[in-house]
Length: 463
Image (cartoon, rainbow, N blue to C red):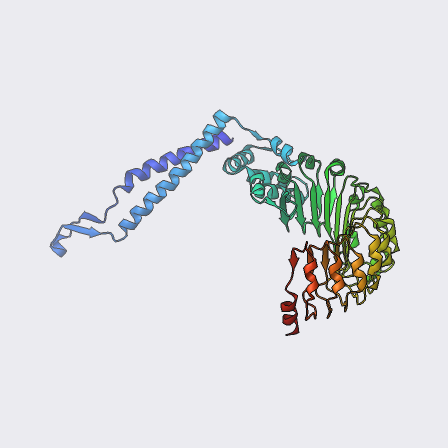
């Protein structure tokens, strides 16, 4: 039936072409007319002008061109029918690529239509094939996403991050392109504001992946992908608006070395946040929490035995119950930033392995407890900047191991000479205070390499 219709169309095409080709060339602007009206006008021969003849001639040629294209299409159809012999269009390759099993095969005219679409752009035929199935819209979105974000395009977006790793950042996409897992040189993957994303088992192709960043993302993970991350992932960063956004699978990453959690919680949740499952993170060495917690979470205490660096950035919320710090015997660096501390916590004096202490942006006014730092033989860096300290106690001279000392942005008026008995000081910051005089004893610090012009900074501050 389809062959007979195509042959009839082809015959009509040939008749139209022959008829119009023979006549269109005879269309003229001026035509000689012989009319027997000499008795009335005195003339038998007339020259008639057809003003629309030129336009009609052009339109006729255009018409023949369109008919010619139509005829060539019919010829191609006949060729396809007799030599290609495609009676049914199968979507087997689409099923393999998309994983959709219920795409129906099409026949006859519909098959030819799909053949023509596939010749123009295979992606269009895939989209239409997915449309014929009962699969959800997400499959079609994923197909479009993979086509838009090719592996080559993703490679062009690779950048070296602060950790000197090749990083790929994806921001506000409708999903996670499968082509990401073809970029095998990827070392760090940063996902921002992606919802309902499933990390498939193909992530195992990223042999070099060590760092994963999730900023306000809703992520699910395949079982095989989780097994891969347990063995390979070293650094995880999670930014959340709600504690429910913390991925539950992160607690099982046994080879994780660095964990960064960033997000504000409601006052009720800040008191009762539960991180007890951290005890499974046997390799965790660095824990960074930027939130508004009222106490150090139990999860941090569970990893106290092998934790080397702890940073609590509390956004001004008062941090209490710090006695748990005593359990972190291997801690080498401690940061308690913006925690509304009024005194140096006594629990810090038990951290004999401590090398660096940062108490930035608290409410410290007096630091007489600094005397107890003499028991921390390994303490080389002390940062008491951005507080309300009014004077430096004489006990500072007991800290003979100090190499870096930060007192900038306080309210210190007098620079005591006993400060310069810390002979190992290499880095000293005292700017943005109320100091008016620098004692000549500063010349004793033979190792000093960095020192601000504190008088000039003080004058700027007073203005």
